[in-house]
Length: 383
Image 1 (cartoon, helix red, strand yellow):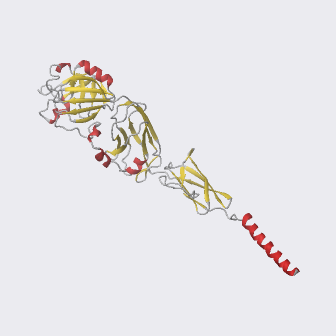
Image 2 (cartoon, one colour):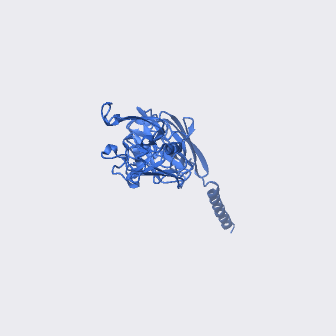
């Protein structure tokens, strides 16, 4: 009987010990296993490839990346088993990755120190239009010109983001290898701020060619200025924020030849100047003895194309304005109207011309609105 009791007591004690081990010793005696790419000591890491931190066992905690005096941001997956950086790295820069992970209540830290490669060639943004802080019209494109040809256009395009206070759909369109144009599907909404962020540092633009800097640009959309030029009716109408504020008789290109025909379609103001000297040199006529020679000093000239078209003051043709088209392609306006329109105008204002048989080319000045939205998207590397 006593033996039986002792046996039962031993069995109970064994059960208690087993249960106790399950509660107290449930954690792993091994740390979580973490892998980091690029590996510790890597010396020629490609800056366009992301940093990836993986918990092969356990779960990731905090991940920090420092390099070039800045912190690199990233994101975890839903299970917190992987972290990936969300932008390219700067070339020729040392980085340190520090990652914590836990397994069975035990936390461990893993680090990786590496350096990105020094590129054989670099490229940069050579010019951005509009200017910083410029107030633009509702049809203004955003023009980015690069210092070297870009072949990885999708990667470059992906790194450039345009945000506005009043969101509108927009997209980039490449004209050649060195110029990307951002245009909205419809005109910008007036009275708002727009910002370009180009996180290009580390982006591979072509073979062995990387950008080394980021860029940004902010500007403002002002009032909506939309003008309609009816060549057949010899009239110009100006709307400000949707309301008609002024109409005037005008005289447009006299036609007869393509070069004397005002281009038909949606123009955007490229700039303005007063005075401007206009000569017949653009058509190869330079001799004063030639009957087609002319040299005119023009005031209040608002440029609407690269092919030499302006809306400008023309006191010499007041008698034809509202009645006949007599210019070499410009929109001739009465001096009082031209002075008012010149003061009103800013880059990106819309001037729509109708009534001629010469269409404005999409790459003539800011003629990008001549392309349908479907055709515009065809010029994007991401659409």
